[in-house]
Image 1 (cartoon, rainbow, N blue to C red):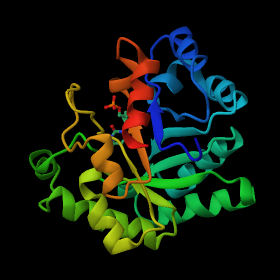
Image 2: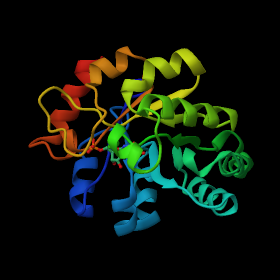
Image 3: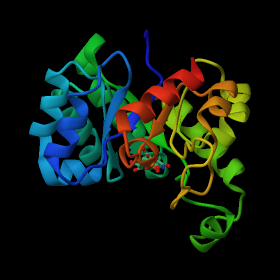
Length: 231
Ligand SMILES: O=C(O)c1cc(=O)[nH]c(=O)n1[C@@H]1O[C@H](COP(=O)(O)O)[C@@H](O)[C@H]1O
């Protein structure tokens, strides 16, 4: 498969379980995301193991700090050879610009740099609790527009905002969407969800999928079924 669309959120808490799973799949079937849990447990060495196995790795640490700190953290991520790294768009334009400038030294080898807009676990009620009165859709557009203005490659958003963002910010601006739930799977803590097929139809570039694959009785079969459904 060329350019696999599924990015598996490898949220295992036992390294051996993660590696047993990884050894049963192939880099042509999916990309892998390492997030805060696995990175905190197993560190950069674990990321290096996946890179050495030729997987494209999305290092999802959602950096959000002063511009200098975030730029240096992005450089450290690029040093690991990852395919994609992310920051929080709410860290502001200066922070995003510094992150982008920090990665420029890696030339053609630099990872994709994207920014998280509104977490897919958030809905209108939770946004208003943190003082944001706009709808999730409006706030995603505000943060995604700022991200584009800062020159980043794209955003993390929910697939529910994808059609609107592709229309407004153009086809080239990359959309990476968690909150993907195949029919019948547990929604869990996600609020703004969509199925893999629907997400592909509205123009999403990459689908981030964790528990529907990793917690399935047979994770390899679950991945194959999702890939077949979007082929
Ligand atoms: O940046 C992310 O990857 C992310 C952003 C977001 O808005 N929502 C979100 O769920 N994620 C991550 O995407 C993954 C989703 O996993 P599942 O809900 O298990 O499919 C988790 O690893 C989250 O940390």
